[in-house]
Length: 390
Image (cartoon, rainbow, N blue to C red; front, side, top):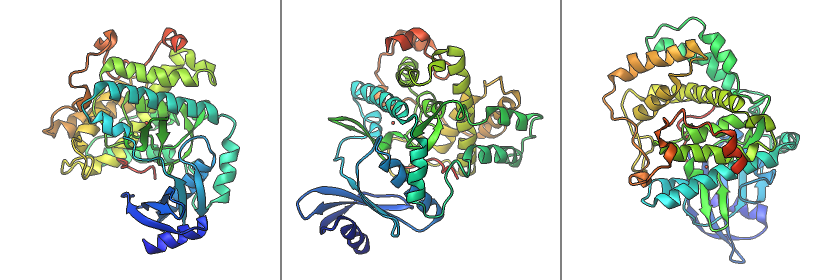
């Protein structure tokens, strides 16, 4: 800790005191400190492993783009280390979802969706700037564009299916190729990359985003799928009331339609969303299946929290009906039958905050088919990852 403080002091040219360890992760140490003039700042220092070095570069570049997140007060690429403005002690979206106030949770979800949509809209046209910032803070690790995680995950998926004792359906490779990047070529936008509930502060000044270690440009559908699945890569995963899920997705979609007008077409939107669900289902399978031998909680300390088996089965159930990708759907149904069929776990429960929530009139729709708001809706109108992208 002393070494981190001394490095941060050199960056800020002031003394730091009263460090408080905020937890960090295996890739980083995060401290809240006091400057000589009484300000509170956040110091984030990264370890030397490949994932940590890429996380540093992505976060330094993503935050320096200035579209969202705390202000960057200083950077030392050699340590490596960031000094950031302190956003304070506001509750996270995870806090309210796991709490007992349904109104606060609903408002938090809608603020999260609108905030991500507006970030996407503001980011159009600034991809080259992010590329330049990556080069400025580069520690020798390839960008996500240079080492595409979606294609790598798709290439591994048939092997994982086969290792689970399931015959790989004919045509699975072709289906995975058609799923592609879920529209990343046609509809790219900036994302912090990890928009899970615990990385979103609900401050008096509005939503503030944290954790840019996977910051990149990706398909807007990959972000929108967090509304539908929900939270595609997160530990804080429970079922949303279907009507509310529709409104959250509609709130995000309304912000990105002005920059990509084709997304007002329901057929275009739904096709992209279903491809995104498939991408994240592949990702979840690769990240979680090996961790289901013993059914453990998705988070080491937070409670309540679902188990790995509950979350993975929920992901497979959502993807089992993707009939436009028949071989992929067949593989997922086989995983449900042959693997999850032996799991003695309860269905994924709802978020605690919505135990007594009265849903909107469209709540008869199923949670995973109800996420496609129509054009009339649009006219009226986000840690601990389950698995890294590597």
